Length: 227
Image (cartoon, rainbow, N blue to C red):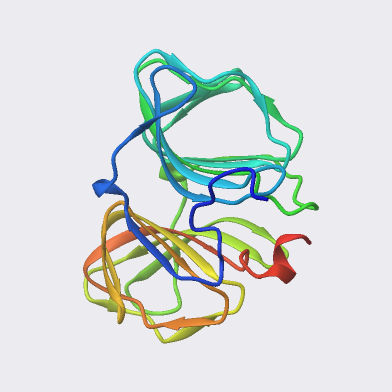
């Protein structure tokens, strides 16, 4: 018997969501709104979501049993350890606890309870202060953020009219479009689109307009998630 209502829980299925078209939902904390993208019936409950803190709102103190990954999209996100402006990438490993809030308001992309068991390194990166590295094709630049066994996380900046070669995602791929419009042979993905491509899927990505995307790969196959 399922204890919760799952959402996009089958990682063998491709998912595309234009989050700009979604309505905000209330949460248990006043002034904190969310758009749920993925929710799995497991203990602890893995969730991928966009969270908006209105000005002077706070969320109750909580522990990350299997970790928390955050990318600050807008505004300044805060907790009892510091303030994190837009562009901040945070990894709070299993067992950490914090009391998040925002004075001026913020929007964050969050992946909760999805760390591999052996991934225990905390991380705080201000991506706006990092250097872009050349990618595998002209017009592509990469900012690596995290790597652990099969899992890789990066920001990727595409110049206009850049095409990448066709490739396969052995352990799946997850994308959140931060700026511009990302494309492949299956569709057109404007800013705010969340994509999840299943393990062993293929595509040939490109962009006409140019874009910046958050990319996570290698984390969706059953053989990878519990390492």
